[in-house]
Length: 281
Image (cartoon, rainbow, N blue to C red; front, side):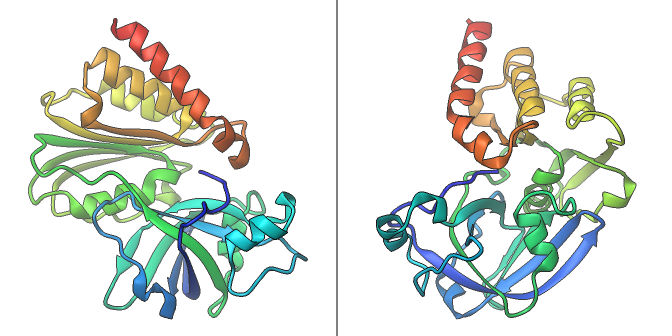
């Protein structure tokens, strides 16, 4: 997902790792607490996210971490690296923030950190941001995504209105990556086991084949940018859905590291919008 230093004026929160749990072979749950989280608040949206700051090895930083000082006094290559992750759960009474990390061995930055995190370890972050929650007045709901979208899908299912109909498609590597997805809604959950297929191919096929009960749908489609682009065109152009019924975005892009995707995402989105506008003209 996104990678950039925390912006000026954005409050940093210092959290402490309380515990970790490997919930599937490639998904690690980290629960963060600490006194500084007393000022944290989340709950309006089910795709709330925070920006975790990872300091660079061997670099001495001001204590407490101060991005304004770092920007003013340190070269850019020494600035902390940011990774954006969905808030899986926030418990204001226990003051506990839960974040789920996809872990693929030594690849990446945040996954290996989560795998090695121990109680007492500190992590700074900013946020939360967010924009989506299931609409109570929607006729039905569509949730689709890969592993990167699974925490937001799980959080959204917990907020689906009671008895509301929801169709869910989650693509993961294999059956060992499935999770329990409780919801008060009337949910039809389909797990798509990717195996050796390209990320998102099964999702595109499943959504294209889906018989929509009606056009009164509120859809959440997130994950790898290539399949997200294909499904956005399908939903906007072929299905004729307006943007206000969609929450749809690429969390990452195949063939790019996170920094490369973040730096090119705005231009990529502009191109997608232009192609879409031409198709709808």
